[in-house]
Amino acid sequence: MTVLVTGGAGFIGSHLVRRLLDQTSQAVVILDNFNDFYDPRMKRANAALFENEPRVSLVEGDFRQARLCEDLFARCRFSHVIHLGAYPGVPYSLKEPQLYIDSNIAATAVLLEAARRNCVERFLFASSSTVYGRGAQSPFVEDAPLGIPASPYGATKRAAELLGFTWAQLYGLAFTSLRFFNVFGPRLRPELALAVFTRKILAGEPLPLFGDGSVLRDFTHVSDICTGIISALTAPHIAGESINLGHHEPVQMLHLIRMIEVAAGKQAIIEYHPTRAEDMPLTCADLTKARSLLGYEPHVPIADGVQKYVEWARGQAFGG
Ligand SMILES: NC(=O)c1ccc[n+]([C@@H]2O[C@H](COP(=O)([O-])OP(=O)(O)OC[C@H]3O[C@@H](n4cnc5c(N)ncnc54)[C@H](O)[C@@H]3O)[C@@H](O)[C@H]2O)c1
Image 1: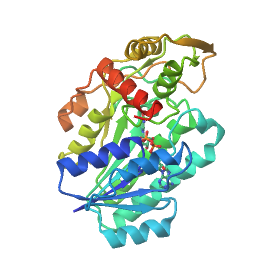
Image 2 (image 1 turned 180 degrees about the horizontal axis):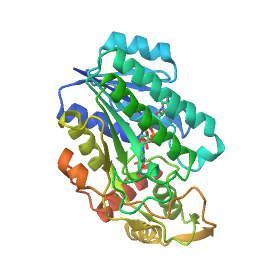
Image 3 (image 1 turned 60 degrees about the vertical axis):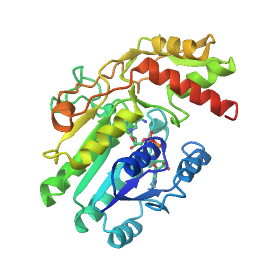
């Protein structure tokens, strides 16, 4: 049994690979192109965590290339695919929409096609709370009507989900969409708000806040996300489903800043900027379906997770 983790050198991917090694007996193939959306040295350092693991192989390559994927699938005979690789990040998707369409939609079709041709048993897709969009009722329920995504990024995630469900319907591919909510923890992507705020507060520099700080986000610790993904590898009756992996306790951005201040022992200097059209005012996951289908329960309280994140970031800043 071999599992393919696309984007396995990224933030969530590197945590997931560790958990796959600790909690399953599967061999793991990481497929990542180490793109420069953020400093590729961070991704190289993540991948280096596994260089002495005999069960992990690293393939450096781009999953937009159909030939590469076909060859890899034919060679490795994957039983499971966990498709985490993507161009992430809401604001940048307004600047480079085509890059998001190619990487998140077209490339997902390449992987779906390789998966069904090579009899993959299960295909888990990393979707996002952004698919709920403007107009969706909070808390977000998977099978209630969706709104219109507020960003090209959200639209690409929704489009990729739809492709997966079509492949499930046409070919019986066991495709499941896992909708992650505001994931955080060590090795967090450096452009995300929590990472930026923490760096700025630790450095005593002004931090940019978009809007008045009342925006609510359902921050979910990466260890809880990984627990949900691991459960989805074996849970019955999840093919063709979308399932939220969130925390169900949204926090205002100003409150998040206060938590970082406490953990850092330093005051924030806040520089207010206008609200951005691409930012949803609120994310909040309904967890009824995740509980019943995956036995999912988030365990890391946000204040604890933020405290540990700030300790990790301080170690990074001071070479620890
Ligand atoms: N972090 C969050 O809060 C969050 C929330 C919702 C959904 N997600 C989704 O979870 C997944 C992982 O997110 P992350 O935060 O770990 O991001 P990340 O950028 O750290 O990881 C993504 C990885 O995919 C790789 N990649 C991108 N395009 C590729 C390509 N064409 N070929 C090969 N590799 C490629 C990147 O190099 C990177 O290492 C993404 O699909 C993201 O959209 C993340």
